[in-house]
Length: 211
Image (tube, rainbow, N blue to C red; front, side, top):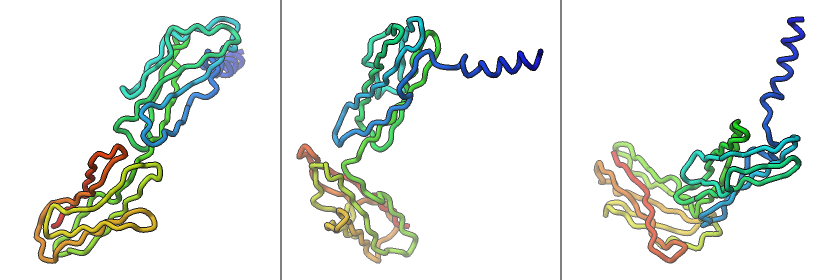
């Protein structure tokens, strides 16, 4: 009898832990387009129960995201609703993640948000170190997003003993950094100059350390 009771309890655990609502998906992935400031995120859910279900509230885990759905939200049996949020991409690049925690009839339902934010360009590497006595030339690759409306027009060195030359290559742009053989121990940088998508001056640094 004890084994029967234990088995019954174990089998019922997944049912007890099941969500009150059926979500189409609990993780939404979105890809922003270049320059897009606000990305809208939607989670669709349905009430398959026989009683009305209340989504009391929903909170987000970062300041860059907020809910646009108003709460409390009552979902009648058989009805579907949408939980909607907006994500601010300002100052963010690459893959960014966040969470929405919805209070469904007093139980937390965690919804995952994944936003892929494209970069207008990438500079690689951004940081160089020369060992003592080594003053070889190094190259930097600049890959430009084809949707970006800005441009780079040149490269200048802060130090007169370091030469920087920008040229076009098949893959994008390339900066060749050549220090004088007599250059001593120093920290300096090269500046990539150009204009952004709005036509404003753009400067991007490549950092150099000479030991």
